[in-house]
Length: 207
Figure 1 (tube, rainbow, N blue to C red):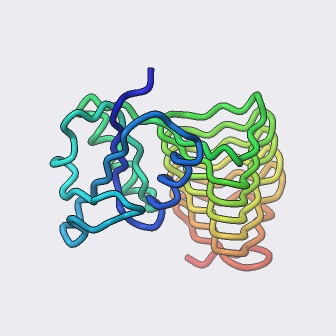
Figure 2: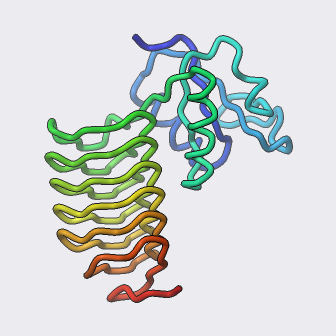
Figure 3: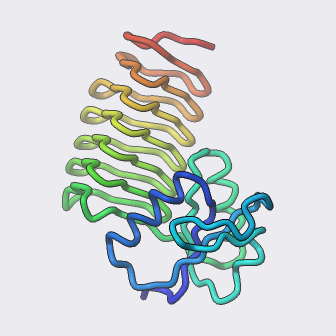
């Protein structure tokens, strides 16, 4: 059952994308926008008044979506709000192409014009941004972010809190370890170790 009031945690650019997707999907709840950055208090975001801090926006809220692009912060805020007994909800833009056998964890976001192939899996708190392709049998770990225009070919495995930069391409069957960063436009040919940063064509370790 959908709650009457849903908190959008975060009031930056990604929050605009999430709210637009909610509106496009016609989801039947009141949206409350909040952020812990006091400088945003009472600012307008797509017509919604921003409340600061988050704790001041929780009255009557039954569920939430963390609309923050930073993977680590998104994970922390999700853990905090879940600990308060609130339920994370996923937001799927109606103009995304999602195969019938895709599995999507709680709190994930799938943007317009993205493609999720058969038997792909998104874990909790993932972002699949505009125009991305997550092909068949891919697995995207919790709180990872696949940036606009990136492509994961079939069978790619993405760890937790990974950032795949805009326009990057990951070749079939590649595994990317936890907390990796793949630079914008990079082409990844081989597995990447956890915590590493790779850039270029083909992708090479930066640090």
